Amino acid sequence: MKRLSELTLDNRFARLGDTFSTAVAPLPIAAPRLVVASPAALALLDLEPAAADDPQLVAFCAGQQPWPGAAPRAMVYSGHQFGFYNPQLGDGRGLLLGEAVNAAGERLELHLKGAGKTPYSRMGDGRAVLRSSIREFLASEHLHALGIPSSRALCVIASDTPVWRETEERAATLLRLAPSHVRFGHFELFYYSRQPEALRQLLDHVIAEHFADCLAQPDPYRAFFDRVLERTAALLARWQAYGFCHGVMNTDNMSILGITFDFGPYAFLDDFDPGLVCNHSDDSGRYAFDNQVPIAHWNLSALAQALTPFVDKDTLLDSLKRFLPLFRGSWLELMRRRLGLVTAEAEDRERVQRLLQLMQGSAVDYSRFFRELGDSPAPIALQRLREDFLDLAGFDAWAEDHLARLAREGEPDEAARCARMQAVNPKYILRNYLAQEAIAAAERGDYGPVRELHAVLSRPFDEQPGMERYAERPPEWGKHLEISCSS
Image (cartoon, rainbow, N blue to C red; front, top):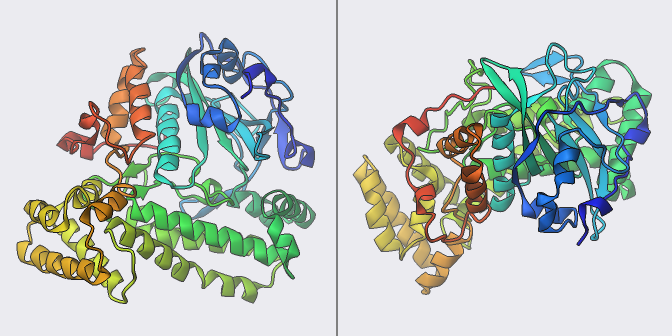
């Protein structure tokens, strides 16, 4: 393990030149202090847990001291926002500091959010606020613990620097980690601005650094698009299976690595509501939970359009046809596991859809249903869960069919099945009201609740004695919190 002073950074993306990013120094925040840090994210950089208590970490992340070897850059890109093309976006409040290489040879970019104004801040102040920084930190680390690909969050730093949103708040910074921060919108920028050589340079860089296997293919650019499509389909399958709603699936928020990226007004489902719109700014419901899959397909189409200077259009259209089958196959396999099934039957998709319709009609808590289904032998669990449904005849018919389905698997060991289900069905899920309670305490200067919540959510599948309150059903007020893009 390394000490913080031993961590130095490389700058491969910065070396691409000023066409792709702009050199900007972080703007310091006042009276910085550590809110929360992730031991697991520290370990990714080979840093010992004690690095969280090193005053240098706060100084680095507050913009008060440069990281050794860092070359801070604001990346430039464009993108489709709520379906409309915005010709120039970019890092308006974040800076790519550089890239670390860990002992396993993995490269991770360090990105500081809330670092101050850049040429791409438009009318903004370049700052992040404490509430949005805490929300991204919690979600990044929780999604990873759930097995959902995500950018990672190393720490949140609070300050006394005032910023204005709807009211006066305090600035904060968040240090984010990812192998790459390149988005769909990077490629759109150079396509729509008619810069084919810059587009080719970006493609060659991304493929060489992150999709090297594509170089052995007859058409590396098409192979690259296929890999992005496959990863995106797998990501959406996990979002949908675990009830995660991103909230702002603009193309500039879509990672080419197929990881969850750029958290805004996200939410996990409480009661099963496929029409959930978790962003109160999304008046049309474009990014509703049940619209995430078609939007991902739409976003991939936008990326495909940006690649047409180098890949035949019909070839890209053929690739796009693979998205829905890939998503459906991955999603159904995840749902089988959540139901304790290890074999496949042709009628499984219809069985899952019937269950979801029953859950929707009865406002059944999505996460708790699957966890409780695996807490005890199936007949006992189903009898207990029956109380949550309004359509008792419909649920009884589904339960009878499910028991018969389990019997055909021929596994008599109920304990083994329950253990298998508990390993994929979380007891603890990041509900908006839990995040809001932790944020409210942090805004008062009490960081204990956010640290405890992070610790619990880092082990979502485990029984954690004394932490049961985090697994309770949400209060009614907690189901209807409005979350905006404001940060």
